[in-house]
Image (tube, rainbow, N blue to C red):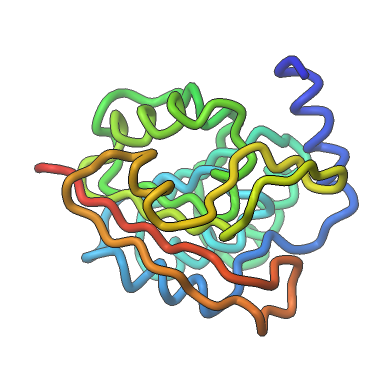
Length: 195
């Protein structure tokens, strides 16, 4: 698919979804990985649940997604919640920000959807100053018809090798009890960048 087809596919998907796979327990794990208040770029923000939570916790948040439909819904949710988030349209492989623009990058249930993993991880490392926090399903490769997965991580080494950072933690977490869409094992990756 070209970029326009990709955007249309995700716009259509977000017209029929009401969650973005980030449970409260996931948000707590992500918040726990961030050192202190600062600037956050949430990549693959979906309808904004994590971005809004980060803003409520005092972070200055910019959120990116390829879907204008998701961003529209996220913006409406932020207004309802009384928080300010800078919503931007864009692809993870070509983020529209200067080098070292944000203290943290968070990316939850999105890395498995990117077209080009190497470009995406390079962009994350280019833009983050302190940490990159990623939550992604533990999955074996298979062809999906329902959810556009393009990247698969069967073990933590695949995820940590994709970033190639010398200081990181990558651990398996259990999301079996999730009520929303994703239920299963996942990896939480926290990579530290040299300051």
